[in-house]
Image 1 (tube, rainbow, N blue to C red):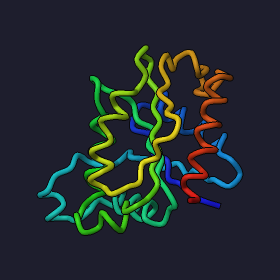
Image 2 (image 1 turned 90 degrees about the vertical axis):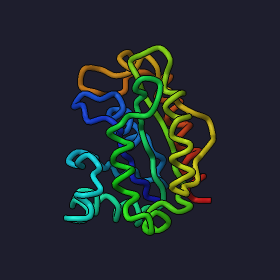
Image 3 (image 1 turned 90 degrees about the horizontal axis):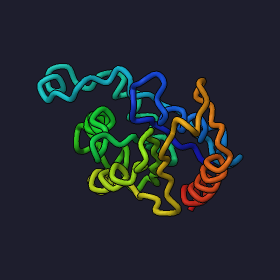
Image 4 (image 1 turned 45 degrees about the horizontal axis):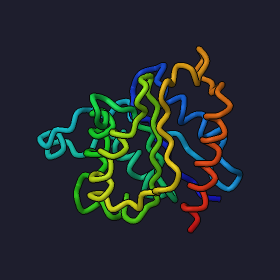
Length: 183
């Protein structure tokens, strides 16, 4: 069985991206386990803090989980036509010190999903992640993309995925991504 660390790129309690990540963990095929990780508690990156105190504990723990995993799944909102600062900040911390990048991320299969209440989906955010993925040295999966628009229609008030078409698309995505992680 392959284990992938899944990270939602929003801190909001009722985040559609966190809901999409939970749905992905539920719908993952039997040979893929998605362990949900959180970026809550990761401070804004500050080189002086890093130099004086080292990495925050939340960063160190998440780094080790990613390093031990078989892959990474980011579920990223789109803010102002790009990637969300809070998730990029977490990645910036996770890539410190620079000598750890290859150990933590190097050639690791990486998937990318996203949800937004807007009508445009998360295409621009997913595109904005590509230079970051290149810098990290991950191996992005470029199979069938999932950019969930009008997310408020796909989830109920408790954050459960209720849209059967989206459920089907997510299942297809996860099956193909699982095969990519195993390859």
